[in-house]
Length: 286
Image (cartoon, rainbow, N blue to C red; front, top):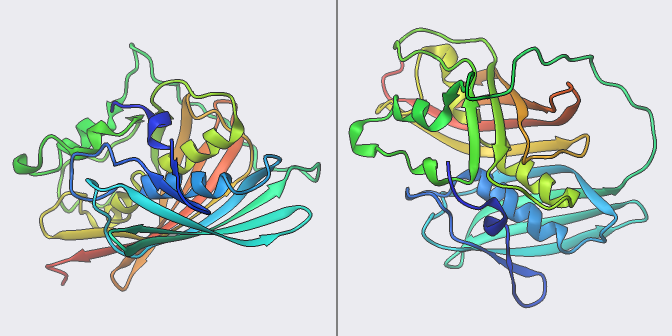
């Protein structure tokens, strides 16, 4: 996966609290959901005091975005408190709303500190242990007419530790494990790394929701789309270094599936938690 992540979140400032995001690097027709999460968060960040950092963001994907068009984001200043700020971001293309987000920021403060002890026993990617490139995995699933996968151009690197086999009708219920990072080096500013984490957080969530049913993302009879996404930020992260991602399916029912994800640094510190619900329709359900 190639490209500059810093360029993707370099927003153009318009009138008032309106910002325009660069065109998607994807070669496909639809915008990657992580781009909307990242660019909307960046727009909201640019309207809050510098000492406030995101602690949660809740988003709804309203309709598919066009990857060939820039995204206009209008920020509404919902609240400005002594410790918290809330912002709503409405993202549009050609005058049509495609995405809506509510983000909350908090002045950092000391407080109680606990997490379930976690040890990452899986080595980081190296030339001797490269794992599976996520783009290669996706291309092993999709039809020849859809190759190369449009997501190859995203400015991230993702290594799949335990990719499911191609075998159809074989349920997979184990957590899906990956190493992820953005392409290139970012400045040390924490807010940029928060945006990078939002960009990574959408990857694989919907695709994993079909695994317990023995299906694989890319099946012709499968329709998958993101509906909503929430992410909670617990600690500062460095997204230009390898982060460990642990995703699992929570429930599927009624044409929808929900997956959870957790991001850790190499020492086992929990950086962020996310939940995503997606549409999942199988045309030959029994």
